[in-house]
Image 1 (spheres, helix red, strand yellow):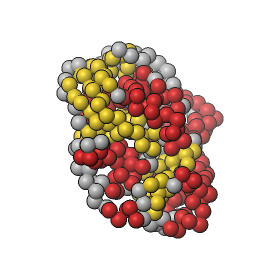
Image 2 (spheres, rainbow, N blue to C red):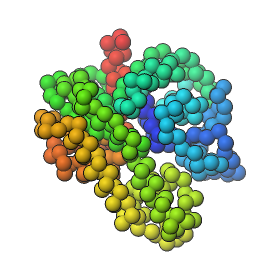
Image 3 (cartoon, one colour):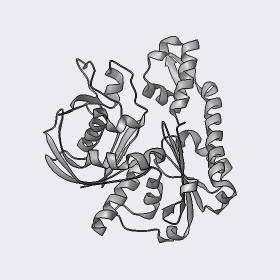
Image 4 (cartoon, rainbow, N blue to C red):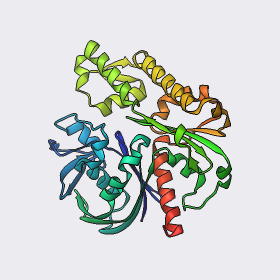
Length: 329
C-alpha cells in the first residue's frame, strides 16, 4: 500500500489512491470522554503499546489541556505516532497491511531529522482504533523528503506515479509552503533544489492565533477558553461568536496577516533576489495559502496556488511513493 503522509503541527494529512485523511494532529493521552456523542467520524481513540490517545477534533474539544506541540521534538512523541495511526485507520481498516511510505519534514529540520523520522516509521506497528478491529501495519519502506517538494511532485507525477510534465526538468520553479508553524521556501532548478535559495522560517499561521488571543484577553476574556484550533477556524472565517453576538475579526487580523504576508514576500525576495524572474512558476501551497496567496501574487506575477493547498504535500508524497514503487526503490 503506497501512502503519502504529511504530519503537520496543525493537521495530519494522508493519501493512498483515492482515499485521504485530513485530521487535526492534536492528540492527547489525558481527556474526559463524552457521555454521548453523535460525532462518530470525529471521535478517534487510538490504543497502542504507547498508550491510549484521543486524536482530532474531539481531542480539541475534550482535552483536559490545551497543549499544542510546536517543537521539532514533536516527531519523537507518542502523540505523533497516534496521529499517524489515526490517519492509517482512515485509509484502511485491513487487519494486516504492508506500507510503502513517503513523508516530509520542514526544510529547516530535514537534514537533522530525516533519518530518525524514517527510523520511527520503519517496522511493525500494532494499534487499535476504537470501533474497528486491531491493525498490524508493517512499514516496509520509508522515505522522507523536505516539505514543499510535494508541490513539484504533484506537478511532475500523476496519481499512478507516472511522469507527466517532463518539461519541469528544464525549468526553474519556486515553492512557498505556508503552514501553521513554519514557512518553507524552496527553489528548484529542474528537479534539484538550490541550497542557497532554500530556507525555512518559523513564523506561520499560529502567529495570527497569538494576536487574536491577545485581543480576546483585552476585549472578550471568556473567548480565551477556545482552543487554538477553534481560534484558527474563526480566523479563516473572519468571525467568532461571544454567546450569540458575532464578533468581526477582520479588523483585528488584517494587520498581522498583512505583516506576515509582507515578511513572506520579503524573505522570498531576499533568498531569490532578482533571479525570481527566472522562475516559470511560484507555487503557493499549505494551509497558510488561504491567508497569504494574494500577498505572494502581488509580488510575483507568475504565482499559482494549487487546489486544496493544505493537501498538496501529502498528494505529492503519495505520487512519489507510487513512482518509487514502479522503479523498485
